[in-house]
Length: 354
Image (cartoon, rainbow, N blue to C red; front, side, top):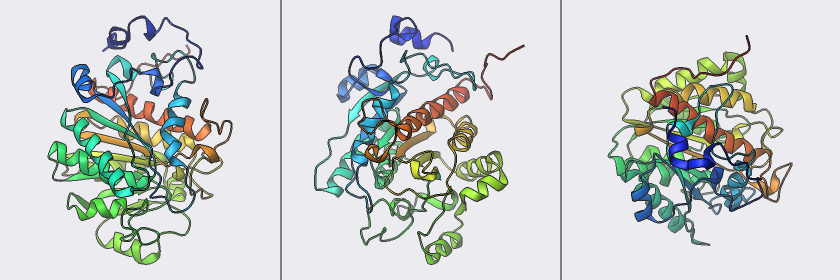
């Protein structure tokens, strides 16, 4: 396991101490590889895909700048390549080659065409056997992401673990548009590849969607844990139940994370903040428990709804605010869990005091 990161990145892996403000801020300062022919040659395990679309947003726009902000936040701290997690005892770059494939070229003013471009990029990446890690953008993108991924891999039945303040199962979205950021789960369900018993939502609260939609979700076997359910039941029980439901009889699992599942005191940089959400520690613990039980060959992931102009600590995206910083950390946590699974481990080797 050890050594792959240094082999791939050379002396930059753990010997360069480059200031964070130097150079082009690709994700984690990883190699930039935007051409599909070049991506085929490199043959990475994971591809970072930026999806700067927010025209399917219904309240506060701005997530088009999410990928840029998360990339900026990922350059903190330095060095950029070696990422041994002192708690989990794993460095994903000892196990995976990762490249930043840049952004999908969004067509301004044409939401459906832009979503189609995202679907095509995820399809191309997934068809090569590369695991897609998409950074949004608004949550409407999970539909084209899952569609492209599942069709490229030939999956007939998938599981979804969905972290979000909202169910996003409205047939007409929030305001009558079937492809907005409140309808992506329903659009995936309509594809016939997702059954209710393989779907779990973690973190909903507030006032949308309405009781009728929640009754429809219940009737088809969907399950959800509100943020207060997580607080009362505990992160481990919730995570393990969501994982079991997603894996039961399915070909693969997609993990989708809307940062508004977090309390706005933790993640203010999002379009629809709602009080009473998860703490960052709760979310990270659940992500660790889930991801270390998933195989990278049967997995896809997106993190969405980072809107940096509402963020705190840095709204200019020069270094990323606290919400963008969380999204960066989340991606690393998912990679770390997948690395444990790849190496047949349930735990890493953290350095602990005597």
